[in-house]
Image (cartoon, rainbow over all chains, first blue to last red; front, side, top):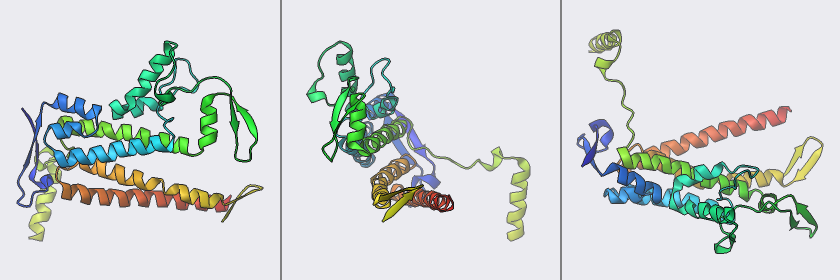
Amino acid sequence: MAQAILPPEFSGLPDDQPLVIELKTPWLAALLAWAVPGLGHLYQGRTGKGVLFFLCVLGTFLYGSYLGDGKVVYASMPGQDPWRWQYYCQAGVGLPALPAWIQRNRALGGKPPLWGGWMAPPAGTRTPWVDDSGKTSTQPDELAAWIVGMHPRHELGTVFTVIAGLLNLLVICDAYAGPLVLRPPAASARDPSDAERDAANASGKG
Amino acid sequence: MTMILGETTIPGAATLATMQLWYAAPLIVSVSLVCAATRHELMAPILQHAARFAVWVLGFMLLFMALITLMQRMA
């Protein structure tokens, strides 16, 4: 069973003891962490962090989806302009972003979208749109109508969901290998002249 | 509040921009907590690190806001 050991100065324990973290099966934890944010940590028994990741990452993703009326997470069709590169960041959040891929594949197969078009790619057809003053205009495609109609919530929703997906990559790394600790270089690994200077300073102060 | 862009005056635009800044608040909280939690294991150091991280991000944002405001006034 894999373990990660936090050195005493980073463990946060009051008596300066190293902290041993049971990672169980790291690849399985990483897979679970990708599928549902925080699930990998719950599997490892790291409940507090699991709940924190679940609330923060999924909360950010769901709030972004809410801001964008459920239309900010979609995978674009081949050749669709603009290419929805943001989906590949959003997909970092795992299963919650998977319906967009299902909708894309249905659209590729010429099937109608499921779930009322939720997470379906926008149609490329011209779309009428009525503004607040009642004037009707024709937008070049459905995506343009979404952006105009929701401005600026479409952009904000996209940012929130993209950041949620990217944050989950950090969560996956944490589930796989434990917390990232950036230790200062040990005295023996540094330049010998630095070590000598430190020693001289210490003796001078003493 | 009124924002003047070149020759065009947009009433309430600055207010709208200020209101949109509030969208950053949940994002700062979320990013701070997640980043801090990937550096520590226990909740106390996570919360301390997250608070420091959030202050740093806010300071960074305020600095850039001040720079952009200054550039707007000079334009």
